[in-house]
Length: 241
Image (cartoon, rainbow, N blue to C red):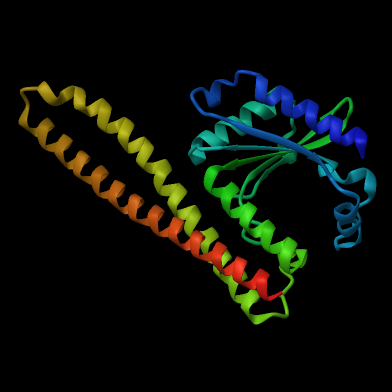
């Protein structure tokens, strides 16, 4: 276990210290951990059964950042190229989440052993940390779609899954908005053009982008408010239990 703790720390140091073209201007929060004995035993016992020498995340590295989905993809691909990660060792859990969990994982095979890098947006990280807290408090089975016996906890799980869907919509809108802003900036160059039809096109584009920005701002605010409410509900249930 000490070996894999050190392996994870070594990879995390390299990821944090190296300059990545795709993450220029983005602050990366990099952490590492080796799997604990308890969680390893649980994983080995849980179907489908995986041999110990095929467990990928004995050494785990997390990279969290305030980035768009497109930036997340670009960063994951740059990391994969650096570590020579095969295509079959990419796990994109954004469109097809695992029990609501969304992220982009890479499975590395380096001379010192196997490791997993989890790349998450700020929103994906906040969701995952909240759900992990629920698992620690109410049973880790919820992370594997096992229904809790407590109805209040089951309701909370259902809410968290709906929040995961909402997060995907928010991040998709943010991604589209970033492209719209780039397009608007390019078209703004035509502002001094003497052709009226170009002015009309620019105005329509800017109006559309502004409307999408308002929609995004409202959806994002609603999501933050709901997450705060969920955290308070978890605290209340923790006190009861």
